[in-house]
Length: 205
Image 1 (cartoon, rainbow, N blue to C red):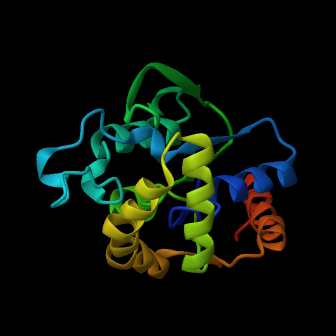
Image 2: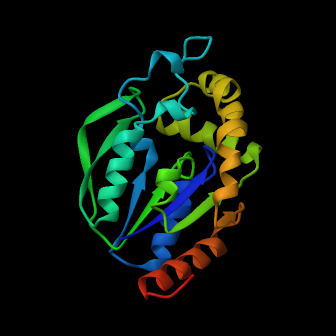
Image 3: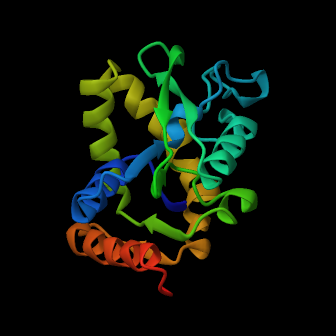
């Protein structure tokens, strides 16, 4: 079982990039695991901002224990019951999603390369480096259209937590990446898919 990690800021296109890689592979033995699924069911009190809002862009927002446990099980070729996070209610759904077993898991999220225990499980580590204006615009459209947020709340959250947390925690993850991808992801998806094929064929990448 191979695990490919894709990190990057909110709105950098991680899920879209992962889907492009899967299309390149045309292989039913590839699946996606979203780090967003592992937000804690309830945010800890010490992870709230001065304005009383949960900081979803801080490492404390995630259920690291469950995430690492699931990634280790996936690495061992086991099937997991991944949690499902409901962004409209900001809580974990009672439902779960079966992930694995398969040959390749693409694991994407803002903190994919943050924890050394997770990095040690990854066979290829990628970071999407996209201009902040583009990330903000994408996030704005997504959160208003898909997650039922107001324009004002998205803008406030961006300046209060998203941007400062990116500078503090997310951008430094670039140092751990094997591949850094810019805004043009079609060619990068083709190259990453070729690396994955090499892994599946038992070759060195």
